[in-house]
Each structure stands twice: as C-alpha cells, then as structure tokens.
Image (tube, rainbow, N blue to C red; front, side, top):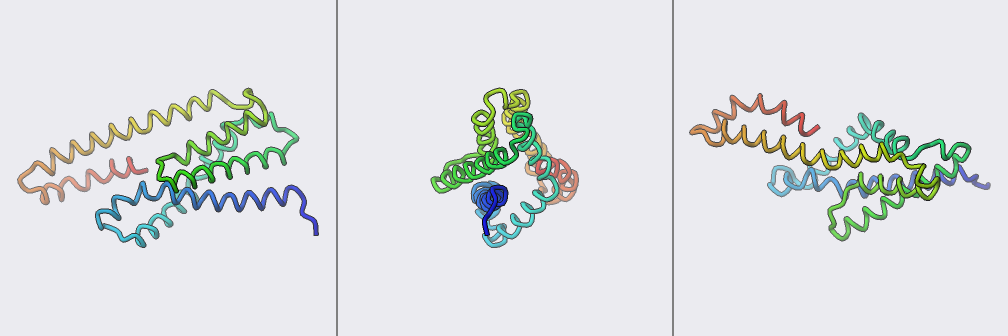
Length: 195
C-alpha cells in the first residue's frame, strides 16, 4: 500500500501537532501554575490536572478564532491557490519549526512566547512560499501591536486592582471582615483580567 502525499502530510501534521501541544504545555503551564505550586496552594499533580482541564476547555471553546487568524490572517491565501499540498506542507513545517524552537527554549529555560514562535514561523513560510507580498503586513501590524498593548494594559489593570484591594482590604484594621465585603466586588474584575 502506497501513501499519497496528502495522507503523509496529514500524518506528519498530526504528529507535529501533538509535539507542539506538548511544548506549549511545557512552556506555558508554568506561567499560570508556578505561583500556585510554589505557594503550596496546589500540588504539582493538582496543577497539572487543573491545567489540562482548562487548556483543553480554552482550546475547544475559543481556539478556533486563534487558529483562523494563524491560518488566514497572516498569509494571503491567494498566493497558494491551486497549491493546497504546498500550503499544507508549509504550515506543517511552521508547526514543526515552532515546536522545535519551543522545545529548545524550554529545555534551556528561556522565556519565549508560543504565539510569537508560531506567528514568526508562518511569516517565514509566507515569505519563502509566496514572497514578501504574500504576508498581510497590515494584519501583522495589528498582531504585533497587541503584543505591546496587551502587557501594558494587563499591568495597568493589575496595578489598579491591587491598589483598590490595598486601600479597601489590606490597609484596614479588620482585613478579613473587609475582604468578606469587598471580595464579591473584586471577583468580576479579576475574572475579566484572567479571561
């Protein structure tokens, strides 16, 4: 039985996808769970279970829009019309390249972004496969701007929430009582920040 090119590409893409998922977990879960495990609030096993549930849930519920941006928002598909196998192979190479980079960075303890890794790989593929014109630079500008705006906005919101918590709970004579009053009001903004 001889495998056709599409089946082979799909098999390699599936294996690369599992490898990428493993590397995303190795690289990103520590960001979310490191403080919980370090403080003793969660055991390592508990953190892995919680991470698995929420990573899967996030991928299932909102991962489609991110996937759509990676697939359609970075490279202009019109440069690959009639070349589905080439495009599939190129995207598989992006997946494998990003996974290998994340594996190396995680092994070395380097703080790298999984998002930057895959976006960079897709841009590289777009340039090699279709030339500089194949990359949708306007959309890339929006993506790159989000990399600057997101941490700044996150820092501002975290600063504001902590300052409110400090004034209304931590600096009071009865912080536990104050927390019982303020706690419910703090949950909504914290939920907003975390999602």
